[in-house]
Image 1: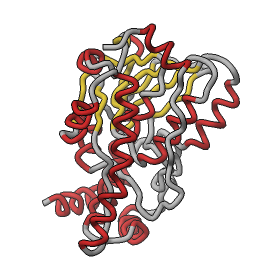
Image 2 (image 1 turned 180 degrees about the vertical axis):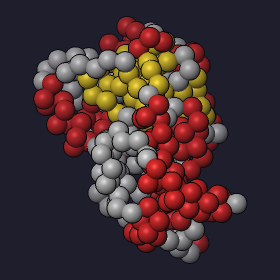
Image 3 (image 1 turned 180 degrees about the horizontal axis):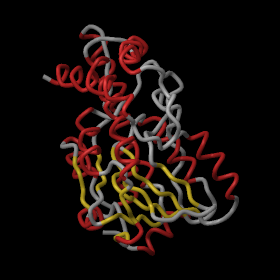
Image 4 (image 1 turned 30 degrees about the vertical axis):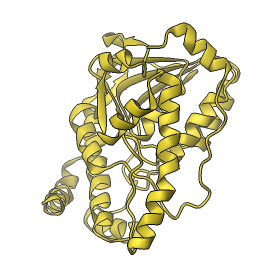
Length: 294
């Protein structure tokens, strides 16, 4: 396992920017299984305190159609500009999202001239795990998780097109494993096997394997009941959209179908808690999601 002194060397010898595709006809997703795991283990987990040098990532990676939020490279760049040339703290509790956006955010953070401390509050899964690797110091909660896996997409076409998609995806799996290897010092073959297995690493295991440096004190983490309920509500919509897309719908058609049940996306205020008026569509949404998963 690499030591904190190695972190400083890594900070000085920052890797070059990872190529992010300009052609976005194929998008990377977080699988529904990860959304379910995040709902069970990490929904509503937040930091106890934050300051003017802190960037919070308690959302999906990439723009989120359902809330109008999401963590993007553009937003992170703006926040870094506002912070200026000072040390930065990045607090993460995210199920991931768009892997390409995650790579872009990783690049943006690695370009910051001052030290970056990453704190994994609940979960850093998928694209969020890539972002976590940008920290010169990575702290993780004892009951938190870091999850790594191969790039996951939804695609449609004939066998020739699927072969092309598989070949097209391979360099991005390698790019992710390169980031994990540079941070952890682990062998590429081991990292590739962990990615193949869609591996969840607890706090102690992430430290043992070099993906994190130290445990985050428990008194810096709290669970917000209102945020938990809202996180799970929105995640059910995201999972339902993913199921419909996996079944052959376009994203726009899937969203339109769900919106007929739910109503207008993003209408509720930030951190809102579902009220009595949500009961009918929540029940219909849950029934539809259950049917799709069966």
